[in-house]
Amino acid sequence: MKKDNKTQLNPDDEVQLIDLLLVLWKRKWLIIVGTLICVVTAGIVAFNIPKVYEVSSSIEVRQIEDRFLEEPPVISQKIKSASLKEKITQELSIPLEEISGEDFFKISSQTGKDSLVLTTKIETDKPNQGIKILEIVNQTILKDHQKKIEEAKEELTGKVTLNQNRIRETETQIESL
Image (cartoon, rainbow, N blue to C red; front, side, top):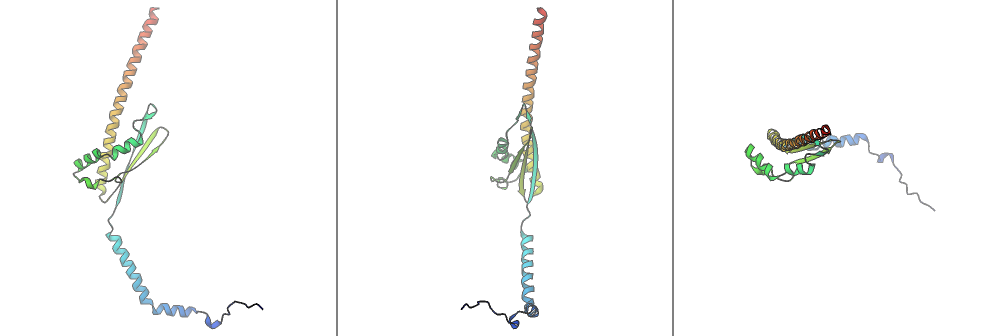
């Protein structure tokens, strides 16, 4: 013979809603005090955590003769270089420890059809100082690129002059025939 393992529920065994409410009412101070402790602790922690700001800047680099002035890894290494960090510390009179570390500059790049957008980000508790740091970084990169553009311009001007001279020589040879 098989026995049913089903338990028989007695209407008196059920927990009534009023019983639950009475237990909660008896323990109301425990609930209120626990909640207040959590709220106060969260408030203290939130106000004592130092504020951290993210400062970012983007530079767009175009191509000259189907190539970039500098490739993204080269620019990234320049930004993270010790010489640039020393320049920043000298110009802003801040200790090197504030901007040292491999993770101080976060650099990302996006290449498009004929351009490269390089974004540099730093996290700092002094946003104005962060802005000045990125301005120095951007000015340094732009000065380097300006030099390269001037060199490329001079090279192109030389090629144009050379080709104009060749055209004149060719025209002179044609006229002499």
